[in-house]
Image (cartoon, rainbow, N blue to C red; front, side, top):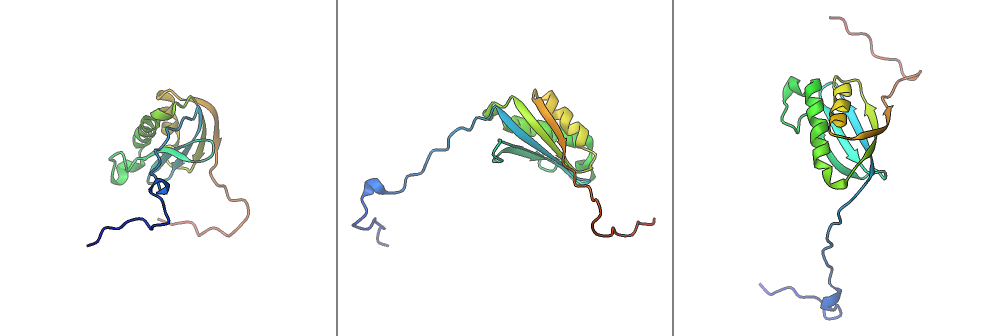
Length: 139
């Protein structure tokens, strides 16, 4: 098979060069905690919204009904902080979304990891008006 070479009009010095990834540093960051009924996902982003690190109860090795425990949420928060150590984060704004059992424990995991909270905001969607809800479940 013949070797592929650059076209004659393109100089070798103009060939595309793989860029080295720069280390990102963010003294202030956002932590988004999605506390669902079946899992808890913790995402750490910079102020622009670019993801620095994330972890979930499932990615920490919890399976099945153990994913939806407060302890699993705490472990996920600590693992996300461990992954984001390279960024040098000191202050964080925490956004909690959902009604799952891992809401409070995820915050305790972040606090035990040494983060200083700037603010804690609950972004759980609450219906006001809108569509008629499904009928209540009878067991």
